[in-house]
Amino acid sequence: MPRAPKSTRSTPGLPSTTFVLDNGGHSLKAGFAPLGPVSDADALSKCHIIPNCIVRSRDRKVYVGSQSEEITQWSEALFRRPVENGQVVSWEAQKEIWDQSFFDERIAKRDLLVKSPEDTTLIFTEPPNTMPPFQKNADEIIMEEWGFGGYSRVIGPSLNAYNDLHPLFEGASYTKPENDPWADLPMECVLVIDSGYSHTTITPLFKGRPLHRAVRRLDFGGKHLTNLLKEVISVRHFDLHQDTKIVNDIKEDVCFVSGDFRTDLEKTWKGNKTKLKSTPSNPDVAMDVDHKASPENQEIRVDYILPDGIHLLRGFSRPHDPTPAAARKRKQAALSSGPDAEISMTLGNERFSIPEIIFSPGDIGSKQPGLADIVMQSLSVLPPLLQVTMLSNVLLVGGNAHISGFAERLEAELRMRVKTEWMVRIRKMAEPITSTWLGGARLACGFPGIVREYGVTREEYLEHGSAWVARRFVSGGSGKGP
Image (cartoon, helix red, strand yellow):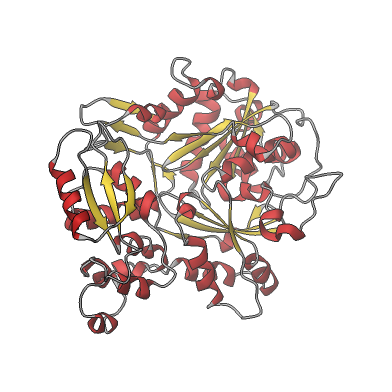
């Protein structure tokens, strides 16, 4: 998005109250934008994370959106998710979640309730390269079913350019302008890597606008890591095929990206190390080696305590103690009953071999290149000067950015692929899951002119139709009629 004159009031035509909705595959990030510039912490206090799913529990009760927070027994829970591969494929389910979360006075949280859509502007995010039929469906529901007074459909990663990124990349050397703290926004060049639930996208931004020809996508995200971990645990430990939520918690709690996959694999190898060294680093090795660690390297192995849905609602991990006394204690806990009972399993190379597929998809037979290679593909279509600048401003957002070692591994792999004199600088937001929403909130309160340039009023939508609206969002408002 181009720079626009800044104002303290919204441009006439669009309602001044703005609701920002980042519609993710795993969760919705939603809330009202502040009416004026505030700190990031104050802005994020208005953001709510809502599970974007409909869940049927084992007792056959149905929970919609945030109602799933009431579930205590996640075993055998079934999920219906309206978003697949980044696109809304079930508008019936999506609308039900939206209606209960934002419009139902009995269920919606007070600071999420949209009482007067006609007096509200909606900033709605979509992934890069969304197909026109999906865009049209979103436009019709938002403008015709809900009747918002104003509407702006934007590419989600582009909103991150409006976050306060200069201190993140430049550190102590950066001095914020005193007279106008918004003067240096949006950041001129940013390479946004959004690794979320369904996929990972690479989106170069120039002055807040995505460079579409350089956008790339890796069809691996948090969902694929969870499913693979589910298979491995079910073979090695317990059958958790019907326990998606529990396995997802395990992934979030213990998985990390290895800085040296082969070395870490050897640390968890019990048998003949010479044989391991002669075996290629591939998924067969990663999944089939005996995961009992060698005595000199116990730091990778952890014990994970599974929830029972009664005394323990969410599992947790603790360092593994390999002594015989500890083994006897674990066995006694598994056989006991009551609050002291524990069902545990010891995890070794599962912790790092699962996230490895984002960097080496070939390990599970995929023909897609790894994340570092896709980043280089994205940069290859840009002029050399932009390539250098983008590499020095790589921003990680999305849930997978929370995985320990993710940024460090990506930075190391990119350094091996570029000239030695080029700077590779990768940073992640303090809250990568809500980073896109925060950028939208900052855009709404700091740059109302840009929102108006890209947005449409309900009157314009009804007058010109959805085809004109689609062209306006693409062109940035360069026309007032069909």
